[in-house]
Each structure stands twice: as structure tokens, then as C-alpha cells.
Image 1 (tube, rainbow, N blue to C red):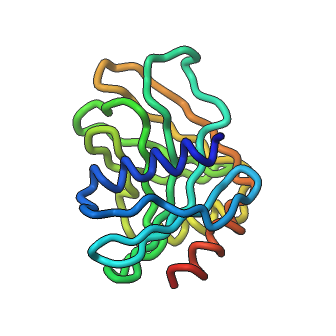
Image 2 (tube, helix red, strand yellow):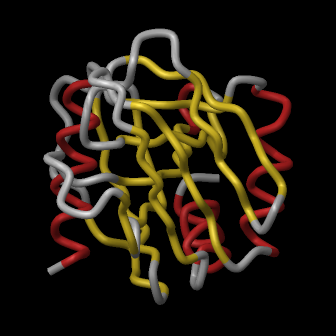
Length: 168
């Protein structure tokens, strides 16, 4: 069920990102707390690894499902692009902090999405995730609510390897 929600959520993300004519994503595999997917659109094949938070604070906050994703789009020379769909609109101009076992990375926000602020740090974030145990995302909603989402990194390396093989 979780995999289906991630697949559907990511397809919604793809459609909102301008992937016209995108087909439904096919699951490449499930790897503990992460799943890998692939689909094609007019620009070529797209593969992504995705997970949902294990915990979300504050509990009971009114928000849509959240996803942490790493995407490869070989036709556009994009590899290991980190993004978040948080499930609510971020406060305009706010930053998100991604923390992997004590190592922090800054992310910029737009609407309900966030991306690594310094693209050169994406490689370091991916390496930290591969060697880490947990990932914590802290953000602020448009209404000023501070949120903390915690993700397990169990299976992330296998999911990243799967998308790397499917979309080299």
C-alpha cells in the first residue's frame, strides 16, 4: 500500500513538474523503507527512489502525504537530484534543513517542494544517506508551523543502485 501511495504521489509530482504525457510509474523494486520507480515521458526515461516519513511532528498536522525523492533523468543529464514534497506550502523564502546523522544540508523551497540549495552538495548528501541511519527534514509552513519529518535510510543504497542501473 505504501509503495502505491509513493508511486501515485510521484506521478502527481511529475505531472505538476511539467512532465506532459507521462506514463504511470512502474515499480523497479522495494528495498526495506525505500522503493524505486521508472516511467517515460516525451523527454525520455525518468527513474526515482522514494520514501515517506516514519514520523511527522507535530502529530495530527493538516497536510498531504510527504515524500523524499532522488531522481535520475538521463535524457536531461540529471543524476541524483534530491527533492522533497512536504505536503503543505512552505513559508515563502524559507529554507529546509536536511540532517543525516548530524550532518546538515540546506535546501531552498518553492510551494510544497524543496531542493538542495548548493547543487555541489547533492553528492555529499547522497553519500551521507548511503552511509547513514536516519534523515530528518525540518521546515516551516506558510502558516508558521514548524515541522519535523524523520525518514529511515534502510534500503536507500539498494534503491539508489536500482535507479542508477535503470537510468544510468
